[in-house]
Structures are given as C-alpha cells and as structure tokens.
Amino acid sequence: MVWGRLVLNKTLLNELMLETDEERGILRGDKAVNKEIYTNLTSDFIIQSEKFLKDDLIMIRKHPRYIDFPKHSHDYIEMNYVFNGQFHQKVANQSMTLRQGDILLLNQHIEHELTACKKEDIIINFIIHPAFFDYILSNLSTGFIQSQMIHFLMNSIFDYNQTGQFLYYPVSDSIRIQEIMSQLLEEMFEESILSKSKIKFLMGLLILELIEQQKQTQQNNFYTEKHTFLTEVFRYIEENYREANLQALAKQFNQTAYWVSKQVKALTNQNFKDLVQEKRLLVAKNLLLYSELSMQAIAEEIGYENISYFYRIFKQKYKMTPKVYQTQLLKKE
Image (cartoon, rainbow, N blue to C red; front, side, top):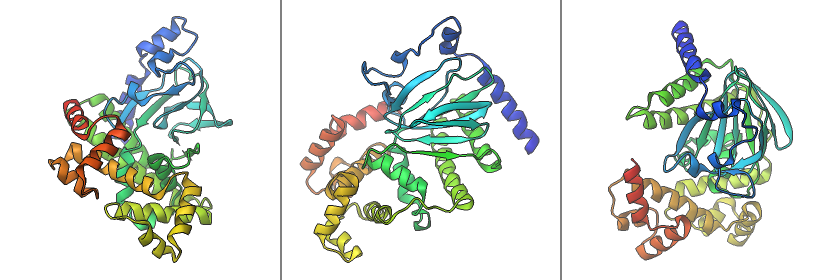
C-alpha cells in the first residue's frame, strides 16, 4: 500500500511539474501578476470566487510558480497544500514557511503576500465557498464544538465579525491526511462525472481529520468565555433554525432576551434575527439544488410560512429569485 501511494504521488508530481499557460507567460518575461485572471476589481486586490468557482462550491488549482504575489485577500476560503518543496508567505504580516505536506487555511478577511515558488515547489490551492462548510458544521457532534476549526468555520459561514483568521496544520507525518490529499488531487485530474461529488466528500473527510488532529496535538486555549457563549449561540441556530427565537435561547443561558441580544450584537455585529436568516437561506440554497420540493415547501421547511417574504429576503441576499437561482444551478449541474 505504501508503494502504491508512492507511485501515485510520483505520477501526480510529474503532472504538476508541467508548466501551465500562466507559468509559461511568466517565464517569457511577464513580471507582474495578471490581475485580470483573479479579479474584476480595479482598486483593492481581492481575488474573486466567480473567476474560478462559477456555481461550484470547490475548485482545485495549482498555484502559479516563478512570480511574487502582492498582498491580497479573497472572497472565499482558501486552503494551501504543499505537495512538493516549500512555500514562503507572509500572513497578516507574519512570515511563514510551509513545508511539504503542510496545510494552511485562510478565511475571507485575512491578507497574505506570497514569495515566488521555484520549479520544484508545487502548491495546491483549494478555493472553497463558505456555504460548503454549512453541511459539515451542522452534522458535527457536540464533542467537536469546542474547536478552533469550528470557530474558524462559523466565522467564515456566518461572516459575523470580519476578523482575519488562519489555521496552520503541520501534518506531513499524518498518513491518513496525506492519503486524502492524494485522492483529492487524483480527482482533480480525473474530471469524471462523479469527480465533483467525490471532491466534496473527500474535503468533508479532510476537515474532520484536521479537527481530530488538532484535538490530539494541542491543548485549545483559544476559547474565552465570550467565544464559548458564541459557540452555544451558533449551535442553537444550527439545531433550531426553523423555529429559533431569542426567548428560547435566553432560557438556555438563564438570562433575559435583552441581555442575550445585546451580547450577540456586540460579538457579531449582527442581530440574532440576521444570523437565523443567514442559516435559513443557506439551507434553502441546498434544498433548491438537491431536493424536488416546491417553493412553498422549501419556505416552510426553513421556517417561513409566507412565501412572498421568503422570495423577498432571498432576492435581497442573492440578487435573484429562488426560482431563477435554482434554474441557473441546475443548468450548471
């Protein structure tokens, strides 16, 4: 089995060592990053998911070598994986060197700048829409809830405090994690009918393995009393989003609804109602794509009896009606 994995990795390395069109342009003399590949914005350098994801939730691509990347952020979650060599970058003004097998997760609000990779430095970028993690988060057992990863995912999904965060995992010695990464890259090249589904399942498994790795290797001092409070709030929303209300949540804390509301607003800069609505709309998006429920049934499933109100808040959030959104997604699929 070890031999088979080595052969697979050697084959993948040979494929990934080949220059892409972007890399060939750099070698011909392009001295600056072609920002048109990454963003339509002309001011801040924010790499846009629409350039890569379209309507998919995950996209895998090789990071271009031979050129420095200036300071930038993303409107998605990015995962860096060092398949071969090393990767030098500055994350939130903190210099880091990732070694072969290491993984780095960055949320939408953090900036980083990247040193040019050499020929042997093969870095894989996973471009992940925050909505992908909604299903994972909602199915984690309560034993995982006090996790740095969970806090990262909640901040990314709910976008509640716009704080730049990153998680670093030196996991080169984890056979299980390296096997999952190899399988993900194999599906990246396979491009079969089932590849997109396999990638989603493998990514979910990878997140669970990283959570388990963290539990085994470090004591988690990340959570203050405020973070613990916020974790309980989000867990309540995950489990009760259909009928979630502030009074029921306040009862869990043995506090008044006013006190809980004030704490939520102070910690997230959003109202409790807004957080519940965000969760409901994420569920609605999944139902639009993966179920055959009517619009009325979907509205009721997420807690809205008034379908007109559901249409109004959906369009306000996603700039199109649920029906148009569903039609576009199904065409892509």
